[in-house]
Amino acid sequence: MYKSLVPILTFFLLCLHLNSRAQHRVSGQVFDISTLKPVELCNVYIVGTTLGASTDSSGFFTFNLPDSGEYELVYSHVGYLPQLVSFKANADSVTLDPMPLDPAATTVEDVVITGKKDRKWQRQYDRFLKYIMGTHFREAQVEILNPYAVEFKNGGKGMLTEAQPFTLNMKNSYTGYEIHFLVQRLFLSKSNQFMVGYPGFSPLTSDSEEQTMTWEKNREKAYQGSLRHIFKSILTNQLEHDGFEAQLTEKNPARFQGAASKILPIEVDNTINLNRENLFKYIKVSNTDNPNIKNIAFKELLKITFTKENDTYGRPQQTLIDAIEGEFLVYTNGIPVNPTTLKLYGYLASEGLYEMLPFDY
Image (tube, rainbow, N blue to C red; front, side):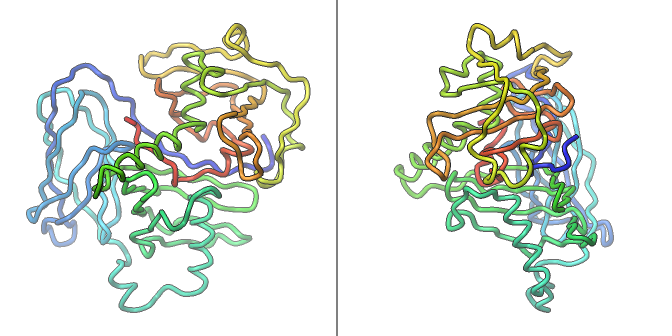
């Protein structure tokens, strides 16, 4: 295990078992656990997708799913602690149990009125924002809609964790989505940084055909060269076709310490150049019990150079991928099932929520 972990933004999705193309109607109700009154305008969304709805004045919601399968659902409201539940959709309609929400310790309205947030919180928030957004995002194109929903707990010696789970709402004018990101676990220290969260997406309304086309282009840019793109190209043996150069190299932990920007260009020893003919000799791809999940295995470091885009230094983007346990699971669209089984060094280690796309993109 390396002493230093490079930041990885993580989120977990239940695999969709595509058994049917029929619509499945999902409905439910949300109420305040302390007053038993319905909760209006609660955001309810399927993790990783654009599917979901908001509750009405009676706390009811309804929306349709395109396929049967297993799903994760987030309930999120600015005045309440968010909730995450799993359910199966195997029938034409699914009625979920009523969901009780606990009022949050503080609300945005409380903060605005009392002016509670201070300089210490601002320093913590700036640190948190830098971590989750990465180093490539354009600040003018991303608006945090509810910054005061974020509460931190200082663990001492520079450690920062979440005081309680919270949902961060972001308007991303670059990709054309409002992103709802439930942060269930956050840990920031000098040597270890990780976050476990569950995103949902609401498409922004375009005011012109030109705007729609720009968003489509930006979404494609966000996908190109991404970790998801890399693993999808491995599964289909299309690395070279998709603009990737790939090598396997021996692990040498001491050479890859520190910030990602300080370890480029990446020089490695004893490399094996991967191509279409030998890819599956050195990287093992196997099936699992779930037809929508594959197992990828390699024991060395995987060096990936994306030749179609340059980094901030004008060089092709380079990333090192370490499979901590020698293997990991990915969905057939390339998204890691559990990103905490991976460590990244280089370009992709400094990416963040800014370029996150829906699971069904």
